[in-house]
Image 1 (cartoon, rainbow, N blue to C red):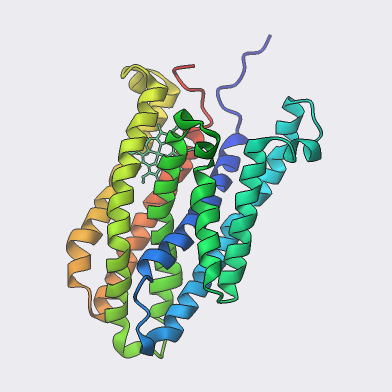
Image 2: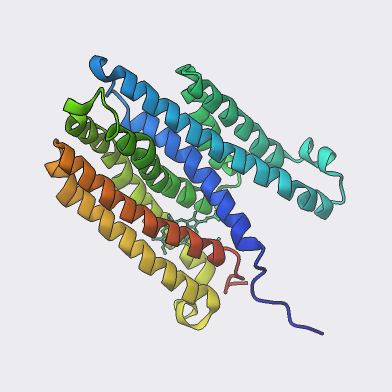
Length: 292
Ligand code: HEM
């Protein structure tokens, strides 16, 4: 009999699509409620409205990715319960909730694209409550990974939307040419408390999930799961290092256009390492846990 391979290489790409779906949705909501919050200065209103609309498009793409993944996984989940997919989707509480919240988010982002303000409330409910839906089923012990990934999404996803829908567009926008430095400072200062809070939550819940899986510290250097976690933590350290650089060195000097260009460039570097973190994480969650 052949031994089962350690890793099914079909799993990491599927996990990665799930992460991107969550990070785009959470990033759009984080951007709207933190980077743009209270920053709608009348003269620059068209820029802020356009930025919110671009964020809603990113959120919609993320939600479509999540829905496509859920639909793709449905037949296998239904087969495990010996049911047909349609009957399973309309009877299994966890699946109904997952699909329900994704549809709420989908409508929310679609309304956001149409510039209907209330759409953002729906999008926020769909993304945030949807990510933490196991709590609604009373499955508290299963909440660690969702909190870890939602916090990571609200931090890194918002940074992605800030760079693409916010800073990069701002630096090309002619109407705001005179005030680019001030607008960039406003958006980054709005994002900063979110990044600090979510960064702390990511670490706390990351340590809890790591401890639960490793069980013994020695599993960190004696198992494939452990080695992969070490690789992930090296990239995580680089993301935190660049985040700290942006926060301590770049943010305080914001206010001019060159400073806005500089922070956009170092935020891009931070995002590159964050993509590596997600790539390694997609392998990590596909490996057998040492505890098992
Ligand atoms: C840039 C920072 C980080 C990002 C973007 C990130 C992202 C993620 C994501 C998206 C997951 C998938 C969770 C799921 O499948 O539900 C995950 C899992 C995990 N994270 Fe992180 N993480 C970060 C930092 C950390 C830190 C600091 C630790 C601390 C040790 C950590 C430990 C873990 C572990 C052990 C898992 C695997 C859980 C499992 O096997 O089910 N992460 N991370």
